Length: 187
Image 1 (cartoon, rainbow, N blue to C red):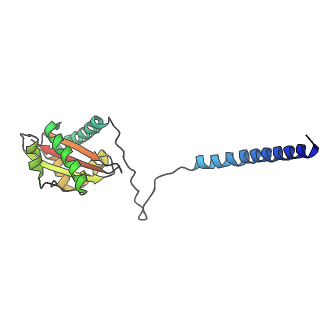
Image 2 (image 1 turned 90 degrees about the vertical axis):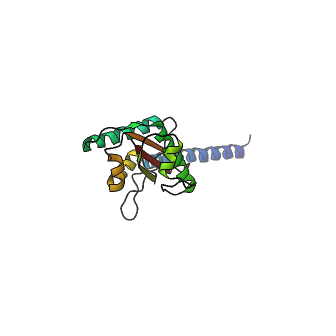
Image 3 (image 1 turned 120 degrees about the vertical axis):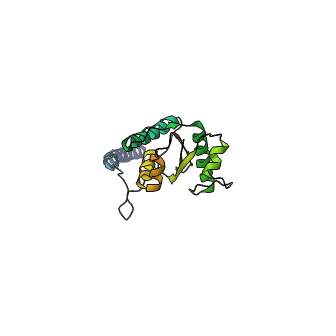
């Protein structure tokens, strides 16, 4: 090895060492800056918050249903109405309609086959009287959806109807996070 080879290796080592020191020097502040950046809630230009997508995970079905049932029964108790219990038939009718609304890409009370809420509860064998149906197309939780229903006189009346004894509550969530909620009450 001659003198010029040693200089090249020495110069290359110096460059590499300087680069490593510079990288450590710059990397630490950048990482600290990124860690300090907290993404808080985002807002539309009118000041209303942009909703976060509520993702329903596998295995949460029962928890969501009973959270809704408990919340509804608390509201009903406060209004003097008796509690509701789930009906498997009404749950089936609600599930069918939630999926169908997604296929139609519109929240409305009629199925793609022209069926009404009454038709759907009869199809699943429900023997009681249908009292009402609430529907929603949203990215919000079941509790946020319940709050929105309680803000409207027509949908609040379905939830607090004193004649109701049975509840069906189901949903369908699309891959993009949109949820189609359906609530059905009966006697």
